[in-house]
Amino acid sequence: MTSRLFVLLLTAVSLVAVPLRADPAAKDAARAEFLRVVAGAPALQAAARRVDAAQQRTGAAGLLPDPEVEGMVSRMNGAMGERNDMYEVNVRQPLPRRGELAAQRERARAAVAMAEADHAMMAGELAAETAMALAEAEGAAARLVCVSRQADRLESVLRSLDARLATTTGGMGGARLADRLTVQTRLAAMRLMLENDQRMADDALAEARGRLGLAPDAALPAFVAPDIGAIDPATSPAVLAAAARTAEADAMAGMAKAAARPMAAVGLRYERERTAMGNDNTVGLALMSDFPWRSRRASRAELEAASAERAAAQADASSATYRIRAAVARAERASRLAESSRRVSADTLARLEAELGAFLRAASAGNPGDSTVLMTVELLEKATDAELQVVAAEQAERTARAELWRYAPAAQFSASAR
Image 1 (cartoon, rainbow, N blue to C red):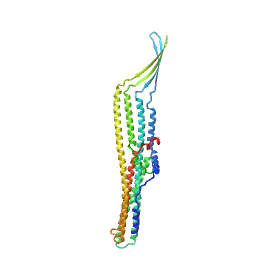
Image 2: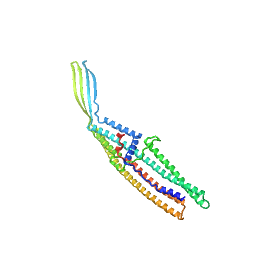
Image 3: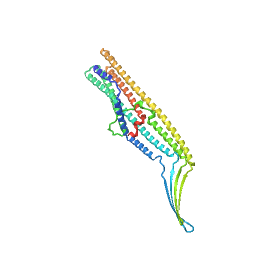
Image 4: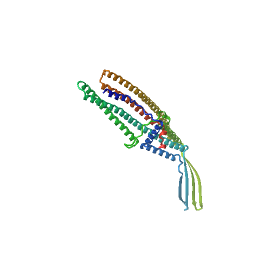
């Protein structure tokens, strides 16, 4: 039995978790496929349509008002019984306030920028949540592999114990029966862990499909995350959205200033009057303007509101920059921890192998000490714990890097490339 357990444990300690290192071409292809699936999500398609709507509205911004035409027919009955027919036509062209049309065009362009930034923010959020769900599923799957391997080893140990119990008589039978019960207890706990990890993996995959609007049996893309070095606050959707709100506030300020200026209109008037003496024709040019006494007060209020909106947008940009830097630092720490965990796990497994050698030498010398079975099981569990520590660290790394999708360059989620 000791020889068989030695083979089991040697298999356990020789399995050192190695992180996947895909070549750049495969990584780029996986990232493109991931972004393609994310772009097809119904929520993101709705955001893309809002970008189209904002772009279409730019064609209606900053246009001159339509000209106005007025016609009038009248008859004058004089005191002496004369009758005069009068015909009048007025053509009027309202003129915009100075700076009003330019402010309208700026506001329309800012609305497009805001819609595009909102699209990129929604895409980044959806990509981050999907990637985190995939990371959780991969972590659960990795734990399933480790725990399943450990459960298989314990089942082999249990079968070996059953074989020894069948040929054992006397006082050793009770000790081996106790060992068998201990192994059964630990095996039952591991089976429960397997069920829990399987449920977690299934739940995470279902959540990813739900966010992407996929059928329950649809294939999912592989986990990918943006490169840490590619994260730049200046190109992140959150900062660009704040810049778009700043531009909108500037456009609103321009419109408020224009509202304080007088609005004018120019007109052309033609009048014909039929009299008994003949026709009288009159042609005139009219110029009209209002007096913006009350609108100036409203303009000052709008200017103050635009200034507050500008300050809020700038504060949002500053806050987003700090959040991005914190997320990048968190991802870097998680990467370092995962690398340390892999290194420490390899050292731990090497020490377990040396401990196994010392244990076997002591057993062959007739000085086994504690129960051989329990000692073997303990070494097996230590090997599994070392593997699970690597799995946990790598899942934390994936989760931290998945969060970086929220701050990935907005050009990756460009609505025009959908």
